[in-house]
Length: 540
Image (cartoon, rainbow, N blue to C red; front, side, top):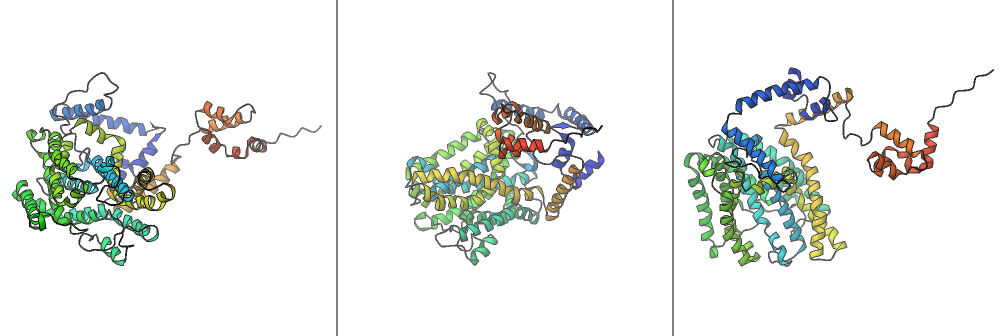
């Protein structure tokens, strides 16, 4: 047991590979079953240590409520009452809050739909499409939500440690390790698409300057033809990361009110001094305008360590009340006015977004928490960064190159772009994340990354040496394949009837009996050829 524990601790053997060696068809095999019994002893001791804790009982009750809420439509009994709701359930490992990844995934999905709309209906910011699709025109607000969420997420760990960051250089190194590798991979993909398939900007294909500017993530400071229209926010976020340690210092020394008031007042003053009190925003130098957005999320993370009285506040209702005036103004003024006044709209909508995050962090509302905990939404959140990075080149290929050849402009082109571009982007982002994003989440350095790769291959080799089958288990066992061959030798047995008898599909039968591709006659010839020769008759 010590040898196994040491191998896992040092990274010599991966958890996944160890589990594959320990189990066969979801059952413990041999002496590995002793590990399970040994672990149950410590689990029992752990439960005995914490079972009298009030907070622990509330956490368990909250988890039961989530399970009951998923089946409330099928059960006649109401879910168990728990007060306060989701007491300390919100925090996962590594200071993650339940639901934040799901919100990030939904925001990325909205940006994708916005670009489908933008590439289909010309004349933005005027709404040239159906009025009932007008809600898809405000992709900028989804990016604003990303920035609020980023400030909130990054501040969770410092908030739990007295607003201490643990080293600015260490923070920036980890952020670069997390953000830059998938970003650079997406940059290469976007450059290839923009050069050889469809340009990403009316300014023309990317130039050498584009490679330098976007490679150094300084696109918010310097102008260059863009390879990907979604990359502007990456430059903004990178600049906000640089000042994040300083913002935390102000929060720790002077408090939340001084931080929010100081940053927001500077931005508001700039807006009021502009012509007609309406600053004209370009495609860069947006970080100063969006700094209050990021700061609002940072300060909002304080709800994680707030008093019980603050955590009990109906944050979801407060968020709805704060959003109503902004949404009403957008609906009344229209899309053109809203886009022209994003400077002020961003500041106005941020309180509602921050309170929404506070509501999720305290486990409310129940329906939203249930939705964010569903497997598809959680899965979407896991690769939402990759989806944001690569969706636009895919959507542009569909909208600009493929759709015009098959459907007419307007609504048919929009639905075609959504139906083809959405699944292609999601599947592509999932694969992209598996290669370029997830490995950098699991490992903190190149040494750890390469060590994990070597350990995985060594673990696979060791598993094969022990007779463990690697990969997806076969649909049919060898006995079933022999049975199928015997049945196929009978003329009255059809492939369909054999598949139904064995509980598999016709495709599976053809896969495991490849001779069937040549017909039943070819199968019979193969079977006869494989028969052993009869023994010769003894001579007199």
